Length: 258
Ligand SMILES: [Zn+2]
Ligand SMILES: [Zn+2]
Image (cartoon, rainbow, N blue to C red; front, side, top):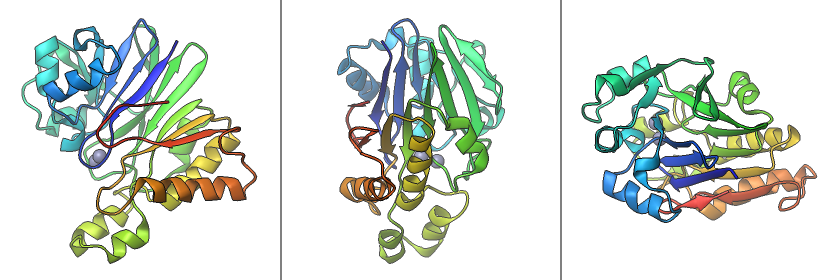
């Protein structure tokens, strides 16, 4: 049975886990080693049993505990050359540095992995699709603007963890300084609720059965607002939410299972 969970999700920290019972992959580790251990214990996974850590990009909300977790449990860290070059997460042993590339598929144990490039203000950032048996699963967060390339990469996924970062009006009228607002709204920032909704509709039309909205901004979003935006567009387009697709929001601080 496949386990695909968000351990934590949001601007304050991100980490997810996918496992088929044989291979366990941790995706991002924007939390301390202690917090990771706690989160994993909630789903009965021992940190020692993690086969690999995959990083989407170097931002601290994704790599905070990467170095310590790799050293403590001797876990290989798969990331693009750009991410490895600039991330500030402490020393990783040479033999645990694994370089990955956009569109270069590889396997870790029994799980297939394909990274895909994402427009985001980091060095060589990626999202991931995973193949377990005949099924596909995707993580698509930290996306400045949705691209044809990303849609093609994630289309056909059974489950997708999709960014729904901010409500554009809350962000525009909120307290963030202007340059930060510009950054988030820009093509290399984060995906709005509105664009998450459009992406969700495309996904459902292409076979996705389970969508988890994640990476919500604490200041410029609320779970019920993100949920409603996607729910409304899906419903208005004839999708029976709950029957055709399940829709939920990843919790900021605790494990959320698909
Ligand atoms: Zn980021
Ligand atoms: Zn992030």
